[in-house]
Length: 210
Image 1 (spheres, rainbow, N blue to C red):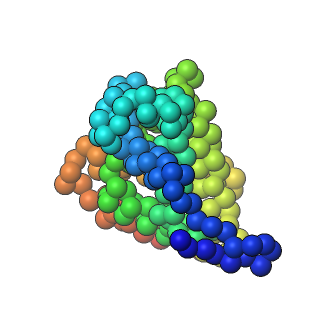
Image 2 (image 1 turned 60 degrees about the vertical axis):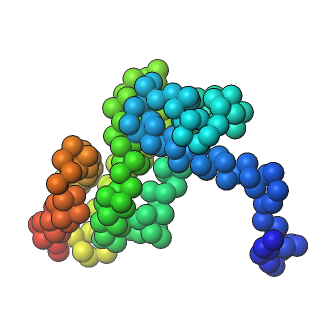
């Protein structure tokens, strides 16, 4: 048993016994569901497929997550967390561009997560899809963070001054390039995602440098 001290209260105990096993089992199911939903989509992927890969019954999976939709939300939340972790500590401006390089590397090592993203992005265009709100909200937040990236890079002296419309266009092209290169990587095993994205960033920085 491990404990961590806290100056504001008694030591916090780590999960143990059945509770700890339940957390580990949820993580295992989420990891497998990433692969299943990434390969088959939410509609095509089944609880039976997930359950078989982890040695459970569909009923046991439902007991852990409440519903297939509940499992999908857990998968998307996990994907959001690991994406932030892959990029490292919070960055701003030019530093965020470098964090995107780390993210591309992470995607080459974790193809399942990238498949999940592209599959959900396509499926969730329907307002009736259970991931629609999550995916559209994340898209808006990502685009806004990219706009802020350019504003901060200008403020920090890395990029030349730009009008609002130009910043909007650069942010939209950056996001579109990332998504497009990732799709090429999924379709063509020989495609060098890191090299291609790195070359794009180098050209972007050279073009916009102060």
